[in-house]
Figure 1 (cartoon, rainbow, N blue to C red):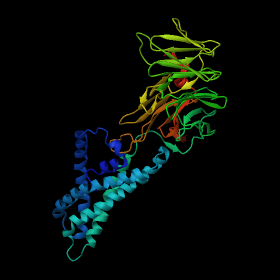
Figure 2: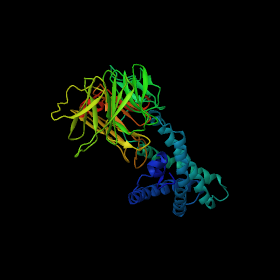
Figure 3: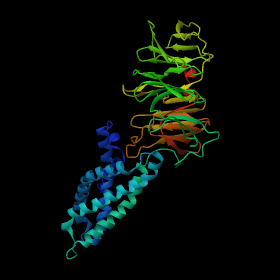
Figure 4: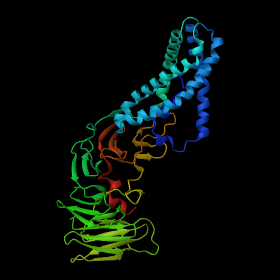
Length: 464
């Protein structure tokens, strides 16, 4: 298998995206691995192919092994442009969606092997051309190279495939999630076009709740009231079938600092300058209040109570109560003995902050543990999801190649209603994993999802 000492490295590298290969590869480690692979592969190739070729061209192996070694080295160098070609083909033709992509890896690896096979035979024919059998022309040389390479590929090819395929414990990838446990879990999310949509975890019930382009949102469980940030980074309030512009200004607010009264009359948000903006949907008026604590620490959170005229604001060590009178005017006061009871249950993305000034996000935390259920979304070079439910566990990854760098970044995960099912996304599609059955299915295209569950509950996260 020529190109050869590094043949597994070339094929594996070709199947990984260019960005993944650029992430801080440790050259000494790569060189050490290459030398360790090169010596046994070169020895195997020279012996096997040299013995077969000697039978076709009538030259003893003792006189042929040196030219064969030289030919192998040249075919190794010729593998560099083929590596680039294979990478280009993989990037152009492998589907972006994970389930479909997993089904195509076998074809991609086979195509890469064929490309290396053809180039290897051509290069070694050029190097060994002068070693043609006397009077036999080029035919014996071509036959010897073709058969010798078929034998070596038959031995090393399966080893290569076994090593470079993604390392996960998923046994079945399917293009739907109709098999999800019943009743299915409602999922709020953003479509690829940015529309606010809802779908059930079994892939049914897909519907568009807002045709506006949405970036972030807080929603009531019945999705009748939605406070959201639009594409222009202005904020809108959707209630009773209407959508109102709340702030024409471009404010940087996060889900943890956005909420509304249960009846949909009031909405409030806290921006990154610690300003509280209160919207009265009945009058269309906005009030602004500057929040200041001398020893304030941590991000400011806002949550509404079940009383439409009362909400709470807190950082890591303080709480304040906002009270709205019948005329709609706001009064803020300190709270010394906050009990955390009587809060409205609304849901949004309230995790670690990331992004830039044009778009930002706060997906749910990458680590979660509740009794015997847990998961960890590992980002970086690995890009792996580890999840456990009871005694069963699953590892989900898309990391082909010799180094198994992640080909896909998983953004967030959350347990569905069923304790054994996990919803996750890769910023392009939503997926459902059945942990005991080691099964993953595609739900729909989308990103930035929210479930009606504890990790997304503003009330349950307010006092943490």
